[in-house]
Length: 331
Image (cartoon, rainbow, N blue to C red; front, side):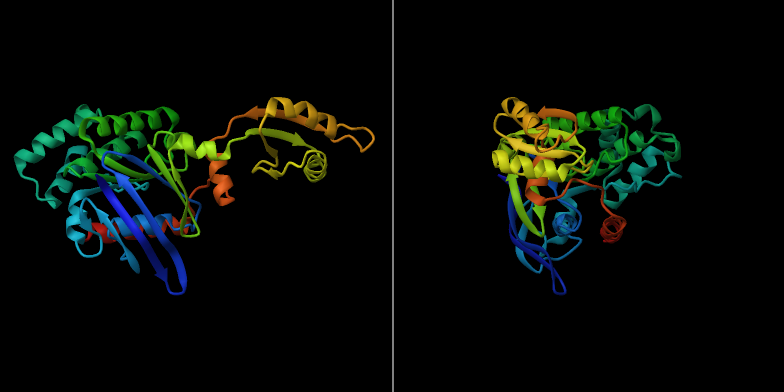
């Protein structure tokens, strides 16, 4: 059973095609990662699924409701946790939850029962009567997760849920999310720039230039890259690339820290051959400062499919999300 079903979704902004014939399904209870570089169509797709934007064409069904024709029903059945804090710092943790519960028409008894369980789940019961301005970043994020779950959404949209948090707090947040999926079967649709976090996803879709360029499990996506990854630091990457291509027919690329990246089937056997080529005294020795070997990562998959390394959203993208969230709350 699908919690989200997207078919040939298209969104135009004037002559610009932001989302171009996108189709995918998200299974019930699945943690689904949605990755893409800036301007790829990621935010636009999420905004359509959350009813913040209407599609130009195509269809999207969330929890059995059409995002274009049944917007109110979609909004009632989803929770949204965006990367920018949206809590009222002057209210206590419990009061923030109460305000959200009132918006969704929860009865006093229903609110009391649900808020108690959620505060316990995110380990904030003892701090619920404190004003939120005294909370740490991790506590605020945990409270936002509790708030997003208060009305029992079937699908939870999370935009960079751990951005800016320290590693220990990020691990705790993921513990809560995985527990939530196991206990309540909530479907999660999330974005992240932390590739190690994307490993938690059951499946990942990668979007670029408005199109889905990869969709599979993390392991299957990494198998697409296949080869070992050799990372070398040299004093002349351009010359090193030419020599290796001429001697072994291998293609190289330069990484974000000016390191030379080579993909090859048997990296352990190739490294001695590579060193021999680069340090050949007849052609002129190229200094190799460091060499390392590793298996492919999701970052390698992302670079291979999009040509970009993962990077933070720019200010314009963040403002689009903030603006959309304000519209969503006002409905």
